[in-house]
Image (cartoon, rainbow, N blue to C red; front, side, top):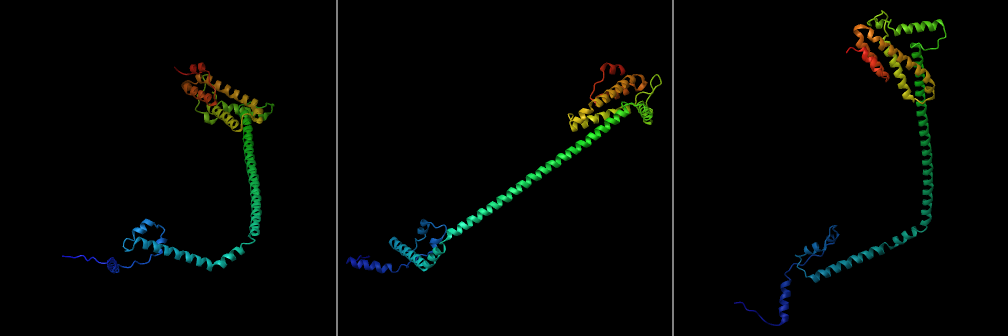
Length: 292
């Protein structure tokens, strides 16, 4: 049976101190533990559970570490005090240097702005020249179209025999040739039947070419602009050409009922030419020519 020995309190304390000497002595705290970028106090304290150290001893050790760090910082400042003083001395008069740099920057800014203005001026100049070039090219195209328009008007007047008849033999021969072409005496109209009275009908191929040339005149006018002064000046001649072509179409439509088996085909061909010109043939005359 175990027995407890009661004696002097001092004796019991000495026994406790003797037993505590068997515990491992804790190692000093490392600075590296506090330099971690993800340092957390709670995590750090939880890692000290196996140090066999009282909380008060831990506080004392932390205070000692703090004092040591403060002393090292003070020693560092004292060692580099002369360098700090020389740094302040070196910065004296820096206002003048800063002002010099500022003046240089302002001058550079003015130079850059001047260059920018010159570039902008040159850009506007080049843009103006390009616009002028486009305008000249457009005017040149208009001029070519107007020359083409004038040539085609003159050609149609010659083919339709509505030129100025001065009575010269040359004009008379040209008109005779144009009339021969229109009425199918050329080699490309050999398949056309004659009329009941034995005369040659209006050549539809020649008439179609006249219509196409007139339509092309209108397309040139639409490209240039129908309100162009030159085109307005040519309107009387163009209107005379149009009326002459329509007269030939009406003649061809009347002749279509006198060509035998080709009556319906010629009538439809003439109506197609009317439609190509954007004109409407007389419905009554067209129906009379068709076989029902």
